[in-house]
Image 1: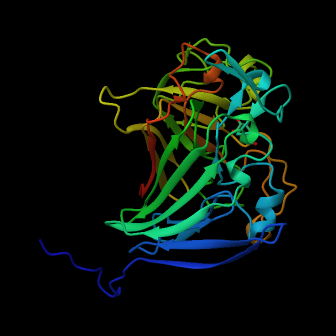
Image 2 (image 1 turned 90 degrees about the vertical axis):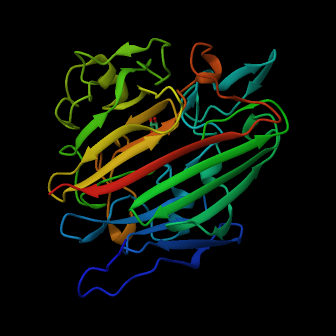
Length: 367
Ligand code: GLA
């Protein structure tokens, strides 16, 4: 087989570079790693919160744009309350009443979201400094991040050793592989909280993006956004994204669940393949740029959040501001409040077991 470079273009090879991203308030050095693939697509990741800071992906004319929200330096991430691009843990999403029971013992967490615990607590993994090392990858560039969450941190039991490998493939996919082990029975639910706007960050709202979510059911929630326990059919509701539908087509309908979320802020129950491999969870098309994003995951759920709490007040990359609904998140995960919902897939991790999940954001274009 002959592989030829496009005429006039120099054959490229990928690279990974590192630079300073500033310092934490207590003076620790924070780095930014820039992964570039053979097509010049680029993913930047900081050791602070393991956040995906930028993601430059070509449109249908080959023009790159940065398609995730973020900040120009670490100070933005230290102040951030929106979890831009961050690695979220130890428990991504909400735990009702900020407590759960394991083997008869009640664990109490901080109530950092009304009565509930959100995204790991007051100082979740998004505010931790991760250790980074570049690792070799076939057909792409990889960065391995690790963090040890101490027994009792934010109220969770067990020393948890977490490793996350970001890979930018030469096929323009960003893969995130999460692993964890513990020395005491605990709960784990890791995700990434990237905010996407496939037309380019800071370019307006995402209501015209066409969304497909491969889910027949979703988790309706109460006023605190905790699942009621019901798995509700999407059929006949504004939550039916089984066929491509503009995000904005139904978002302001007088629907009880949309009102509770202030838009979409719900977990969808994914159709899982029987072999528990990666399944296509979602496909998003941005018609003006032609960019397409597919989300593949081993996880059973995905939180579709339409940036309802964004208020345009924080200053993002290049001075951009991010008003309400100027980005969407597709957070692959186990269902919210699983520690308190025996019927949901288990989030318990035992000593001797390995937590291992993979999520891939694959990019292409439509003409
Ligand atoms: C998740 C939650 C939202 C919101 C964001 C962060 O997506 O479901 O309600 O808290 O994180 O702002």
